[in-house]
Structures are given as structure tokens and as C-alpha cells.
Length: 291
Ligand code: PAF
Figure 1 (spheres, protein in one colour):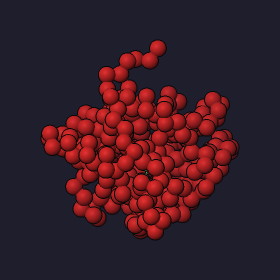
Figure 2 (cartoon, rainbow, N blue to C red):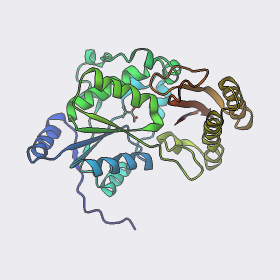
Figure 3 (cartoon, rainbow, N blue to C red):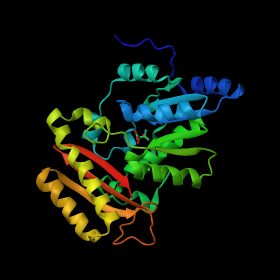
Figure 4 (cartoon, helix red, strand yellow):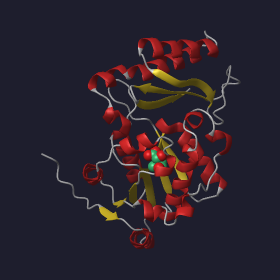
């Protein structure tokens, strides 16, 4: 039996109703925490919501499957949707408010569907190189959502590290008075990073996909041990993922954690990011570790 939730989830479809609610909360001195999502909520989202609840007076979650960040129409069509289940999860987590706009509410006129933020070179590498236009669409919708919700803090998972960096830089660029909080990746017991896309994996595929995390932790270990050069680490990791895992690998790279530019060696203890994207059947999974 489901535990009884004492939280009432306020749900708003329109910007004006949401603003009326948030203005009244701001008026009584509450800080606003915001967790933007595309739904299909899982434990990773729940950890963002919990972090927001700890830090802020009111927690707002948005569910909007943003068409402009899908470069592959099939991926957009297949993106899992289950709003009723999501609402129950939000109630159980104690989220105060759900913003559930439709496409017309976010993009009222066709011309406003145009990209409004260009993430520059940070948006062209790694994910950006394989998903042209993805980060421009993502950053533009996040800007639109931040302008609507005007939170004090917004919470993003490290699993989408490149997304976090771009949002962080965009907020700096516009000088928005919002703190972008990076929350740790939540993993299944076998190490697989939680993702809405995992719902499309069979139990056997989920088990196999744990090799992604194992390979990342192996690379982390080797980087820290300093025995192998980065080229050898990348080659071995690619080999393991393709041969042992039988995955198609889009990339496995070692980069500066701030620039996401590929590095051949570590300079002065700089912080690095090891990032990968692989295909398990027709499902694309990403993961990373900061080293
Ligand atoms: O990470 C996501 O779910 C999406 O990219 C986001 C941040 C909600 C923007 O659509």
C-alpha cells in the first residue's frame, strides 16, 4: 500500500497561475527551489527534489518534454511519459508545486521557437558533436523556464555534466540571481546511472550496462595511479565497451572539467572529467566521473 502523503501538490498548467502562486509564497518570505525535468521521474530526480527541499522553502518541479532539444524525432516520440505516476512521486517526495505547461504555453508563437541561446564551443563537443542543436534547444528552454519560475536555486544532476556546465555559464552570462546547484549522480545497485531512458532497457541490458560505470571507475583509477597515458586509457576503455559490452560507443574522453576540451595529460592537479556515451541497442546512455 502506498504511504499516505501529507503534501498537496499544487499543479499549474499556465504561467499566470503559477506566478500568482509563487508571488504569494515569495510575499511570505519563502525561497524558491526549482527542479526542471522532462518527466519519467526516477530516484535521480527525487534526490534533486530532496536537495531543493532541504535548501529552499518552496520546491517547484516542471515537467515539459522540450521538442527543441531532440535532434532525433524518434527519440522525442519514444521519450517515456507517465504524468500520473510522476505526480504520485512528487507528492511522496513532498514537492510543493508542479508546473506542467503544454508546448503552446512555452512557445506561444512559432517564431519564439527560434533558438535564443547559443552555448558556443561548449555545446559543440561530446554530446553536442553527436546531437547537433541539442544544447541550444536545452539552454533556451531552461532560460525560458528560469525566467518564468525565477527561483533562488535550480538543481541539476551531475549525470548530465555538460548540460550543468552550459546552464551554469548561461546563468553567469545573463547575470541571473540564481544559484545552479550540481547534485551527485544517483546510481542503481550495479552502478548504472539512473536515467529516464533506463526504463526502456530489459533486466539483462541493465545488468550489461553496468559496464559503463565499471569502465569509468577503471579509467579514474588509472588516471589517479598515473601508470598509463591518457591515449592508452581511452583506447582500452573503448575496446572494453565495444568488445566486452558489445555497445556502440559515441565517445569516451578525458577532458578539462571546466572547458570540456580533450586533454592528453594532467596539468598541476587540474580537475578532469571522464565522459562517455554508448548505445545499448537503440538506447543512448551517458555517464561521467569527475576526477
Ligand atoms: O535534463 C533534462 O531533463 C532537460 O534537459 C531539462 C533540463 C529539463 C531541459 O529540458
